[in-house]
Length: 170
Image (cartoon, rainbow, N blue to C red; front, side, top):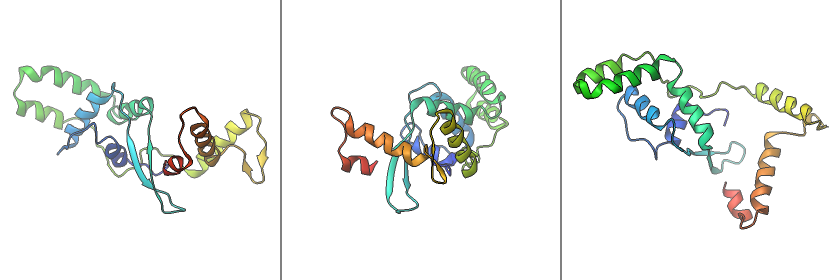
């Protein structure tokens, strides 16, 4: 998920959002979602096997991502709240003009997280060393693949857990 874009996150949250015509409307909807239990559903294709998969994001992570998107410029949320509070006292057009003047641009096809492969490898190496795990050949023992296998094992072994076929789909 290193190549997750702003647009892919917005698409994953589509069950919680209505279609918007402007960035301002989208930011407004995100602002309203910031404290809700949103569970984004991502659809993707595995590079190595070209197979489709579905994965989810925790509500806690989604809240932080939403806050990050609406809070890139700290004035956005403050200004939005002030303008929203005045909405009932103003006409809709004036409200729209003020929202359109907010100083943020959501670039939908920009990466959501600027994380390189080497940064991810270094982070896993640091965690691997803190846990006192040995290297396996040229790699750290703790890797993305190991985490996926561990999570799959947990899902398989819990009471009333998933079948191997269901885990493969995930």
